[in-house]
Image (cartoon, rainbow, N blue to C red; front, side, top):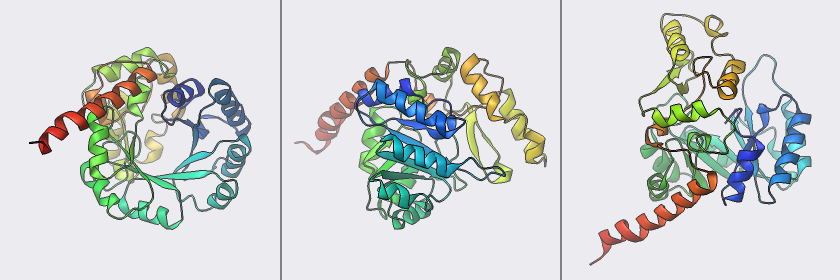
Length: 304
């Protein structure tokens, strides 16, 4: 949720009874993150978390400083993603912070559990952003992980309504994680044209970029993403597409609403997104319809 996990959306998710996450690296400096956390505390008195994504980089951001800001801010829940979070776990643990680690494979989830994280998120191939390189969809990945995981587990990738929530619970997850669905809500900070594009798009309107580089990312299909795929499929290198995939351009898409300015992430779930509700409306609807599914249709299957 880079550029999207901002205080108004995170606070709205918290107020609706769900758990929202600020994205730490949306902020250019640790001091900016501290201000973002403080603003979120002003908007809600309910729990929220911070996502700290650890990625390879020639000039990596000061992860330890971001970590220390999170600890000092009073946040009680952190989601780590990307590389192994082991270097940061002792500090989080000493501060009493619960850590969820997002994974794209069973083996990574098992390893995270061995590191004594408090929970894991398991990302199926349907997800926006980085789905890993195994291409295992949630229908198989979630129960496969559930068979080997004893800590709480959230299912991610392709979830946007009550049917997905009930299915995830049946597959062994303890809850669901939604990104694209929350991006397409009234409180989401992205431009209205981005939200409308998600409503109009089908499940076929995404592209997988960086596949030849084994750093696959699922993004909304546009002229830029198709160009990137073509260049890399023809033997190009990252340097050949660097300008096309610049994060600053994706941010401009979200801020200005020009859908062809750069690449931006969207998951397959966009194929079942048909409206732009408030966060409160969305959460209420998912919970109510899930209860109806469980007590109605599913109960009828086992009834007399």
